[in-house]
Image 1 (cartoon, rainbow, N blue to C red):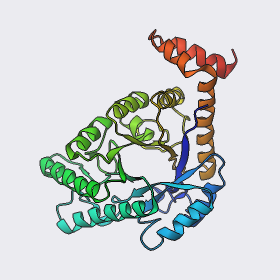
Image 2: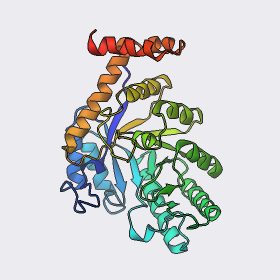
Image 3: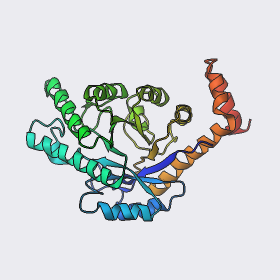
Image 4: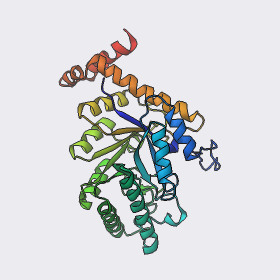
Length: 326
């Protein structure tokens, strides 16, 4: 059976507030407690931490030691430049040169920590690089600012990957890195070898993309650097348990990750509101493990051969025969 390197985002155990529950649905755990909790979940080999909130220049050595002591690998560091009030009008696209430089320096600091710890990748969600209204911004100016900032960041630590996590919208109604195709065009214009795509399946569904098709699009460009798993109803970024809504689409996605030989990390990224955080991760993990076992039993080569017929019912019958014993 194909084995992927599985990890989890530390933000899973956050407070998870919304505009009706500003204080959050959970108490939230300190980063040390999150790392220890992650270490108890069988099947997880890694964890992703957020810079500078959870890992920073003051604590990174102690945090890295704790991660190792818990039998885990720090597989990625997420650079947060979307959650501070001064970034309301953009971070890497801010017109205020001091605000923009602060965002660039923050990304560089996260890259430095990753380089010192031997972490090969960082995540970058551009949640403030966008707009809400017609005539609100100069689009050309913002694209120029964004491309220039990403070039500066990528050149700072060229041996550390920067994985852009695209998203259709939220918190702005329109984001520049909104879809896989737009993000690939952005990366192409930046022209840095260490700049690639972080595919978050929830964001892919939210953008009404097909997960498997998008895997092929990004992989063919040589830019499939990292992968996040969660589910939703396509109307919002619900960050639900993997496979709970789009059952067959996730089976197809994992089939294609196997077929293309993806050997990077897969990180679970649920943000449970009413559910237990740890169980949300465990059930997501079981879905992935169960799907890989299913693919092993029925055979990826067998599925691949059936695809030549372009008859979806052939594959459904094969999978259902195994799943439902009928």
